[in-house]
Length: 273
Length: 273
Image (cartoon, rainbow over all chains, first blue to last red; front, side):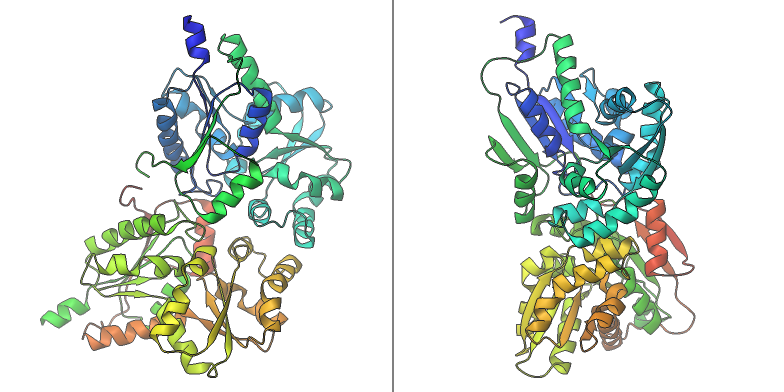
């Protein structure tokens, strides 16, 4: 095997604060079915979305150490909150490429949304507070204007099976009504859970065009691996899931976000956790 | 000073997974205004209510070590989930008395609710899964029958200011409707957040009689300290709050649960966290 072929056979590491990042893993598995995938979900400390930058960075570093020790060829930060705060810290730890979910989504927005239009962003409190999407918009020279709204109730509503409910509709109208009144047409789904409430959003506001990081991130990962000659081809890749805590509800969430069999789904303790 | 007077001047330690336990602290401060109080909220890993027994016990032990190192004369576990799983583990660590919030509430239920009646319990998923309330009912020789319901959306609704909203009403009807149909009259509020949604519950179901652990636990702590000659009297006690993470939303939650000035409110890192 050549050096490149050796490297190509290494797994891709993907992580999230919990199990929501499985929506990104699912898309990667669809676009790159031959890749071996290792996922880590920090279910013992989930959620990150209300926590401080310092804590989010510390937890993300511990997870990155776990993935680096498993010799991954790339790390995908499949968590908007961790992507908002920890990318620089992780890139300082390793030469392995580290890909977040924010830049792919913002690049897609700049390509699709009309120039000078007002776009919407919904995300966790910490992601909104980080202004990471504004910074990404600047990096990609987008001239769209962003109106953002922290939507902390959407994750629990989705996890509890209330995505399609009258209560969720009321809360979605609270969150999105003012944006829609300001003329928003493109809406960035800035949290990995949100694709699971997309249908409810479109039922209430059918004119909205949703941008979901999962697809964009999977496409960008494919390009990144191709550029480095590190794409694995041939047989179907394996999917291994590790979590820092496991309960019955976590098993149910795994099915909600990533249906069906995986090669491994078990507890792994990381860092100081 | 006598030995007893020495011990009486030591602080009482109180802890919770986050800031909800401040509803218990507030009650203790009201009933025992001369006591020095040290509170620890594990805001870097909150919530505990969806996590496993092993994880909840590990976190609780780390917090107990923090409090023991501060020479507390008693530990109040102001978190139903930690009280459900960790009391035995904590009692194995120390001779300091450890008081949970479940026994005081259940004792009150056995005294108030009619014999053989059906009482309701609402709590987190992990608390319900532990059957800790059933075990306490047996310890107190209560012959009431418990119907329980995990209510994972109530904490986020309360924390996001949705306790009095049409959405919360819909969700409360989902959670409580079936209990009320089964003839429940006494309802145990099995989570420290729930006193903040009590008014909405009583607006929907005015016949319910709510049992809140905070009052019962404060009364039991008073008896426990009195029995040991360890009550502090005289000048107003100090209130110190420590958290494992701090953000703007956590400062707002502190005000929601414990209004006004405290002597200290700062970050403290514990155990392996």
